[in-house]
Length: 344
Ligand SMILES: NC(=O)c1ccc[n+]([C@@H]2O[C@H](COP(=O)([O-])OP(=O)(O)OC[C@H]3O[C@@H](n4cnc5c(N)ncnc54)[C@H](O)[C@@H]3O)[C@@H](O)[C@H]2O)c1
View 1 (cartoon, rainbow, N blue to C red):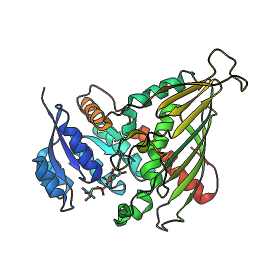
View 2 (view 1 turned 30 degrees about the vertical axis):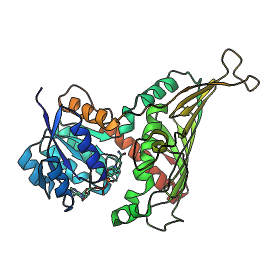
View 3 (view 1 turned 90 degrees about the horizontal axis):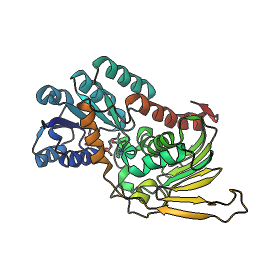
View 4 (view 1 turned 90 degrees about the vertical axis):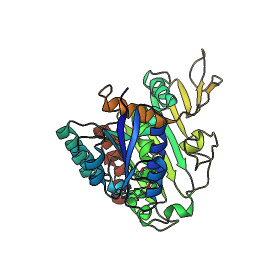
């Protein structure tokens, strides 16, 4: 099989994770890295590929089939448009862009160029998430009435040394909550409205330290979510799953889905139900557990990206879909600022 030529723009934390994923598939080979930061030259050297300080020179030189855009969020737009113009398919990190207007530009350019854009919502590749979606949507919980989730971590102080990470675009709402919103949309269906509060009472940077949300889903279910990057706790997706080495695994669940027949603790599946007895509060509850099994979603994602480039599959999360997750996430800021519920 001919190997696809993949290039990376932005070789920081997540760019290197994509690099490792490319090395784990024989469908693709890395052909170049573009990043203006001097430390990235050693990343390219280590990978045995050419290094470029700007994206356009790399695109002109290596003519990749696919480009992974892993630059800071506020710099997603330009390299994504340049890559599509160069005739490449794009895997852009989440959030697709920092603003809805920029997301529209990406959608339009993808349509004009005929080249698909896959967005790096990597959680969608976990079997447990696909199984949760099936379980909720099949009605096994009865009618979904309520969802309650949290992502409470304390990021290390050095994380916020770079100036770009002190800005709102790098705050936990746009950087981390967007994963939760995307997963909730994927499992429970579209979100109809959001009310939220944010605070920056700990660090005092432009970016928020915590957010509290109330959501109404189109199905009528209600959701609440608590998020902070300044709290010590074992509750959050990465702690639960071990997806990211920077978060020591706690195995603790982080989201509860509650329905008229049963409830599910997640991402370890603990299904609570009353068996053959009536579903009301008089019956004793029993539970069945299916522990979360770690899989490398980045490898699954790069395999899927190759299938998209080869026109064997449509993106699991395309720019339009990711723009909906972006819209719901940005609504958190709008609601917090206006004090009003935001309709989506
Ligand atoms: N999917 C996930 O779970 C996940 C995890 C972490 C980060 N991310 C996303 O990945 C993106 C990058 O985050 P990070 O933590 O890797 O940041 P980072 O700061 O570690 O890396 C960004 C890299 O991009 C380079 N860069 C900046 N401007 C550039 C440009 N115009 N052209 C080329 N390179 C440029 C920087 O020099 C740096 O090396 C963000 O959008 C973030 O939201 C996603």
